[in-house]
Length: 293
Length: 301
Image (tube, rainbow over all chains, first blue to last red; front, side, top):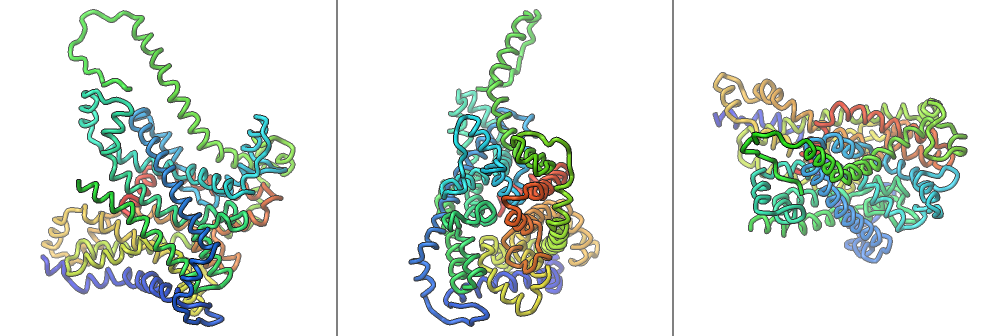
């Protein structure tokens, strides 16, 4: 039996295509990009070895540091908001709506499959000011307020970006956490109720600790996705006003492809990769310890 | 707050007075009212923006200026859609998106299926390490491989086609897909493959005859995850779209908004609505699979 399933030729036939695509188009480019971060220039101009100059430049580049700040604050705010809202929705589905939750679950989930670009343009129209004013400002006017040009300020753009991301993905986190909650054994919840745990106490002492693993994987997944945010901020306001809401991904894209600084672009990409790694490890380390306890 | 289900061990001999259940029902309705209000607000927040956009796509330019935003269109006028297709290139964009997405997803699923089988069903030294090596790719952001790939594609002269996008999406989809396929193969009892071997079936044949049909469901699930991530991608499409004729729907939407931004709302509204309507139709038919698939993909990733 083990001879049959150890057949080298079969392994090679099945694994080789995948492995060669992966190595040629992913592993080698990553290594290449690592190498490029020590160079300056581009393919047309030629490359020049500059050692750690790119990293020094990065540390003193206010636009780069601002984009790190945009990425990190966006990731943290959105992660906290979408996991919290997702969890509240999941609790609503499981404990309040129960079997009747299917339609609500589906309706709230749907925006997740819409392209981020379409969602960003939809929100841009919703908050539009001027001759074709959107319903948001119309409502503000109806209550006697002045129209607000949300996209004219950094804080306004970030607020809209956070709300928009929340709108399109909280239904997804709700479904994720809902399946996690369904896995909690009925008897545990019932016996806690017998012991007099109701409402917030039941959630705080029984439900949250039991759904901790799925909460933590949601947090890690959300951080990883939001640190890589690109489409929504690009389509919403193109990183503006100015470059104040350009995340690291957008700054890298511009540096590499609009200014053709391949070397420095690779350095920024490396910084982004390290950021994702650090965030995952920070969340993962204490969580794996807690699970062991 | 909810009461424990009434187990009612003893059936009462006398019927209960009529007034009590009625009052209890009334009390229940009052108690449920905040919940229904909350759900109603939630649904309005989720659905109204999409409804508003689709309604807007039927409005004429004068209606946009003359009527309030929440007014319904005076008539269902298809000019905006015609405009989006003729002047906005939406048709070409859709064709490109499909020509890129379908081959990419097919390649990703097939490559992942074969690799999952080789790494999980086949037995050889070092397969754990190889699986970890492939999984490492899940963490790496797309930005990390853009510059080298752009250079290579340019050097071998394929930048004037959709091929760079297909190749890049395939490479980027492989890590998660291989990992998920391996996990799904782990759930299939080994005895099935062993029985086939006893019957004289070689490992390659059991891959095609037994493994592939058994994995149909998993292939659909993973295929859907990859479909949405490829179809909705902007980064790769923007980098490797060198001419407007190669633009996918996301790139097309972006340039349509730059072009029409503050002047022609109709065509833009129609282009976005096409996105919403088409995906809504797909979603209505496959929503259970899509929800389960996307959730599985993220927890395991």
